[in-house]
Length: 256
Length: 306
Image (cartoon, rainbow over all chains, first blue to last red):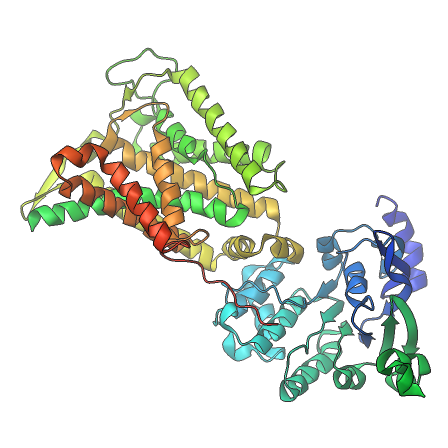
């Protein structure tokens, strides 16, 4: 880590601002969960990460957020190598995530859940409160600030999880299946929120999502994983026309 | 009726002591899953700091810090215990932060024994009489009740401490961090909450509460020995479990429940059974735990869907 400072200047100039992994492989007991994956997320864009179950999406998100150290390959945040950083350090560098299981502070209020993230990011009590109120307003929870998080309906808990991720003003937000378990109308609502994130907060969004309608209509670019490998990348239109994508999603018969 | 009111006052006063002890223990348990057995020695240390060290036994030990004006005694004793609590955190529990709960508990046992033996070395093994704040042991007569001043002071100080602690936890920046850490320590750390700071604050508060227990209980008990704090911590532990592990309001209510139970048993048990009062009290605890294994006031867990 001592080398970071030296590399920093030159690399930042070359790479520009982005969260990126290059040639990342993660092996568990010799078995590769992902192999040779390269992905880049810039502020202001929405990138969809899709793939069948077991394709390695969550492993990749864990690498991007510092929860999983890759066996091979590099992780960079704005041109600085973040390899070996703790998740908390990666978060301080501007990479926030939501969680599939939510993991809210169930006994704290809605406001406090977002506020504690802002406080922990270094804001004063009052500034943190204002910041929390703002992100909660954007995520449609502005009317429930005092409610205890544990008593929220499930879909609101997902939105609060997103708000908490936004409360530290991250440059990059990774949303892990935010629409899981939501009805169609709840999905529309969530899509409106996610679509607004780059404009409102200037952040890049990596969207991991099973719901094709959601991911196709929101993403600027798509990154498709299957069996731990990248099988296709491109705009939603390009990907939908791709044979490898169709094979992965519909099976071999579907293409014939 | 007068007799009953008198008993209620005794119960509230004893319950206050147990509730304060339970709060100090429950706070650390909530955040670290640490059952801090050494809390009893925090209480003993506060009491012993009042008398002159390395003196031979006298019927009433010579006061040292205890001789000062109360406005100096209180902050000094609090400071001593806070320093002791922070030192145990820094040198014992911080290096063991990723250890399992049984290891933490063993560590707190060793801290407890080391502190107890230190008291033995410095002050000897015999009980010492301590005349702290003699004025507080006076009784005031009111409507046929004889009310020891110290009971009123105990109840009032406990109320003030509890209100301050809950305001601190509810509204301060650190309070929000402490509550988040108590609920999901790893998530709080991930979000950037400084673990050392939050845990340090919790230990410091726990130390202040231990000092409060010692200063409020000492005028009532009059004598101390090297194990003086242990039963107070034990009742605190029981209160935490009876109240529902991990809930501070539960710990307080558990403390008062035990205070009430013990006082009532003391008054209403037949005279020949009174020496075995605590056996009945703990029997009651077993019954409560069998009927309500999660305590009287269990923590509601967040329901998970999917």
